[in-house]
Amino acid sequence: MNPATIAIVAEGFLSRLSFGIISFALPLYAHRLGLSLFEIGVLMTLNQVVAMALKPSMGWVADRMGLKRSFTVSILVRSFIALFLVVAQSPWQLYSIKSIHGASKALRDPAANALIAEQGGKKAIASAFAWYHTAKIVAGSMGKAIAGILLTLTVSNFSFVFNIAFILSLLPLYSVIRYVKSDRSKVSKRDDLSQVPSANSSQPSISHSTHEDNTALLAPLPASSKAMLFSFSLLSFAINGTAEMLRGLFPILATEYAGLNEAQTGLIYTASTVMVLVSGPIFGWLADRGRQESVLLVRSLGNILSSIVYIMAPNLLGFTVGKLSDDLGKAAFRPAWGALMANVSSFDPKRRAQTMSWMLLGEDAGAIAGPILAGLLWSTWGLPVMLGARVFLAIATEVYTVYLSRSLEGVYRPSATSRK
Image (cartoon, rainbow, N blue to C red):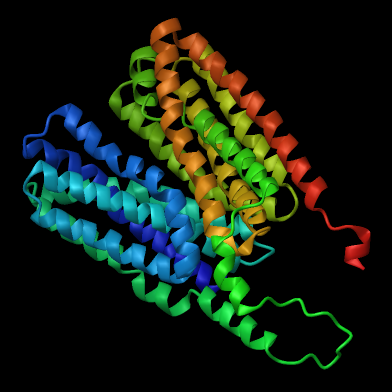
């Protein structure tokens, strides 16, 4: 990986480490302040709701302000969220802080993904996304473990824990400023070159004027671009929705249906974290070498296999195999999907962050809708119906994925004349 990608991956690791600590400590702190379980549930999902509402507009802001500048600002805002928690003493303060967190996430996510797409290297896009998401997953698990240890050692000193989260979140700021390239400088250099007369006047100029660059974002998207963007946003909703159907429900499934205890369930989560750490970069390497459709196929196969195993083998071994296959599919999805987002957003470079924001919005919506649908099906018609629906949706999503991927190749594959 190049220095820019390493800096972005390091930021993803440290930021998720910081918020792994916060996600463990904040519910306990809110309960100490007197919030009910319902109020704590609203508090912990508020940032996701705010991020979804603001993400398309924040993608536009990122394109206008510059990807690196937007990324840096979001890091600063997000870091101070942990510091604000140190002095928060009332429910309205906690809700305000989580709302600010959602706004920073809405700005950070499209900027970070667009920067990886631009600076991750043309031949290693999927690997860059694989390392980025692998680092975040591992850091999230580590953050929760660290929070538990710190709260135990300090006798529930939440101020100390939040200060540690603030420091960890702020650490990658220098490396981002130092090593991530400025997209604004690229635009300036291109504009400067466009003013230099061509040595061969017969060659047509392919550069754009400064006026065109400054006003392109204000023009409406063509109908074809809107249709393509909607199709891939719908795909991201379907993929993440089926992948996340058991998010939050797996512990209940393991303890009540399979009869496992909490310790056994925790060990399964530990094994799945190791699986993601090892397999994520491997799938990124495969996707970069033309195996993107095959890698995406692993995601649906993981969903199908895990659903069948959960029904057929409700024991420790069966649930371990099911969870590992499920998380193997998620590990395969991230790098291939990142490369697909980079490909789709490259068709309109001036609106790259906006394109990313809509596709990421589909992911967020799927992550919310999936568990709700699973809970509704489970409580109404039973576990077999819910897992059967998960299998059916995984197959349908895979068919839609292949259709869109091949449509994209057919429409945008360069012709023989253009290659010459």
